[in-house]
Each structure stands twice: as C-alpha cells, then as structure tokens.
Amino acid sequence: MDKKIIIAIDGFAGSGKSTTARLVAKELGYIYIDTGAMYRAVTLMWLRSGKELSESSICPLLENLKLELLQGNEGQIVLMNGEDVSGEIRTPAVSSYVSPVSALRCVRQKMVEQQREIGRKGGVVMDGRDIGTHVFPDAELKIFLNASVEERARRRQKELAENNIVESFENLVKNIQERDHYDSNREISPLRKANGAVEIDTTNITIEEQCLKIIELAKKILE
Ligand code: DC
Image: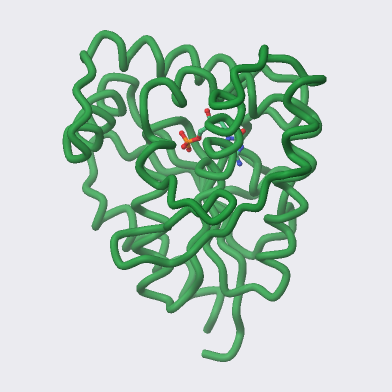
C-alpha cells in the first residue's frame, strides 16, 4: 500500500483513544502520535516552574521547550528537553491541571504547529481532542470515540495501577467529568465530533474490536 493517509482519533478522556491509536498504527505500519501527551508535558513543565496558572507565566516557558516523541515498544516515549517524562506526565497532579493549561491560546498554537509538521506526509494515526476538527480537518479518516464515565474511570484506574499509582474511583470519576466539561466548553477548539467523523461507543466493546473497526474503515479507503 503506497498511499498513506491521516487517521484522526478524537474523543473524551479515557475513551481508549491512545491504546486504539497505537494498535491501529502498529497494524498499518504508521507513526502513532498521542497529542494529549504533548499538552501533559507542557503542564509538567509549568508545574515544575512553580509559577501561577496564567497565560503570561506559561507562554514564555514554551520558548525553552523542546518536545520529542519517539515510538517505543510499549507506546510513545516523550522527551522534554531530552528528559524522558513518559511516566511523570500521567501523574494525578498533571491530570488535574492539563485541561486549563491546554486551553491557553499560545499552548495550543505551538502544539498544533508541531502536530501538523509531524503529520504533513501522512502515514500517521493521531489522537487528541481537536485532530479531526482543527489540526487535520481534511484527514481521510476521522473517528470519534466515546464511553460511559464509569467505564472510562475504571480504565484509568487500571492504567494508573499498572504504573503503581493508586487513585480512588470517586476521584477519577470527578476528574474525568471536570475534564469533559472543560475540554468541551473551552473557547479555542473545543472537543466536538468532527464533520464526517465515525462515532464509536466503546463502553461494551473490547480494544481489539474497536481497533478492528477502524482498520477495516482505513483499508476501505486505501483500496
Ligand atoms: O488524552 P489525554 O487525557 O492525555 O489529554 C490530556 C488533556 O490534554 C485533555 O484533558 C485535553 C488536552 N488535549 C487537547 O486539548 N487537545 C488534544 N489534541 C489532546 C489533548
């Protein structure tokens, strides 16, 4: 298959976007980009700075930020100015602040610029909140994933436990609801199902099943 398309996967926090995007990319031999990790890295950089949460204190920090996304066997590796922060960007502290940080105009501008550069030549599966609506509105395949809040909290709890992070189910539900609200109601590029996106509810299906659906859709386009 010579033709290389862009697959945009958007959806709510914990809807299975990252795992799905990674497995679909592996199957197609594509690059996998988890854009949420980029916003998480910016949030971590800001948390470490000890500065207040405002555009004027966060925007200058971006000038000294070099983000590299590497394809590891177990998923994407995120290097922040050369340091592997792949684990630290998943901590509850980062999760609590990532929505307001990612809502800032300067943060979004810089991340979107990098995402467009990475996906320019196609052959990429990118997951996030605004990939089909804003980053690549002309992507050949757009997917919108959804699942119940409880199921998404259960998945997050399992994922965190695998990284030895213990978080209560109630806190996770609260964090997910807050992020859903924030991500869907922010001024710039709010989370929306893109025009032409295929919606998949993943509450009662397995990761394998949702991947298969997307791979089938991709193969039809590539035929
Ligand atoms: O996918 P995630 O939960 O790791 O994303 C973390 C946050 O980053 C999410 O709450 C909203 C933001 N985000 C965004 O605004 N745009 C993207 N393309 C990806 C993530």
